[in-house]
Image (cartoon, rainbow, N blue to C red; front, side, top):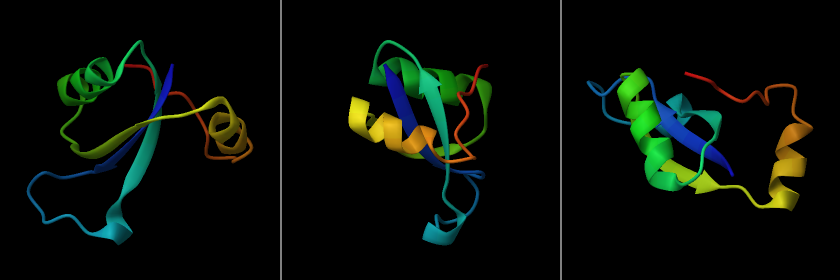
Length: 70
C-alpha cells in the first residue's frame, strides 16, 4: 500500500501550513509508515493518508512523486 505522509521538518517549531511537506512510502499499514518516518527522521508527522488507486494515479502524474526508501 502507498501512504502519503504530511510532515514538518522540525519538531521544535510550531507547525505552519506553508511549511508542510510530503513523502510517499510503500509499506503494509499506517502504523508501519509512522514507525519508519519516526525511526529514520526528525520530522514532525502531521498526517498519514492511505492512497486509493485513483488518487495514487493522480499523484504519480506529479514530477515530485517519488517513493521514499529508508
